[in-house]
Length: 177
Image (cartoon, rainbow, N blue to C red; front, side, top):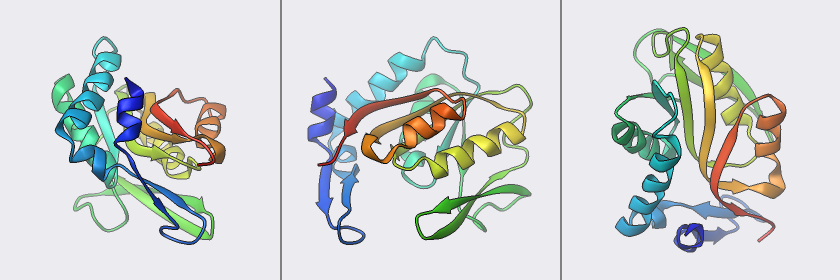
């Protein structure tokens, strides 16, 4: 079943720069059967778990995260780049391959003890996801699992998150292709 999903993900060679094989989920999103199947797998996995909030990372994590939150009948919270959220926020800086970046969440988005499902489209180095987990835990939430459509296994983000103590799930994996 996951092969059906993997086949619907486009690979764009040398984007955004030479040597990168970009895994583009927009082709999966536009395919109603593939996208619905993706959401169904996530719902099946999480429907019996205690989840209070789904948190999606900007920007493609908003798409699957919001649909999944709706299907699980829980709220949705966005984690965004700096300056995009209108109320009081906290931020977390993280390392990129060449430099640093930062993400933010509203300070009232997560309540102490909330069981949180973190969602994004893809896990590569794990830097953004780890920063998101740190924001969630700073607000008192418990990250139930970090959930992704794609795992770029050669890059090691899943391992990095697991070594930090977080559970990780992905639907499909790409390696060295």
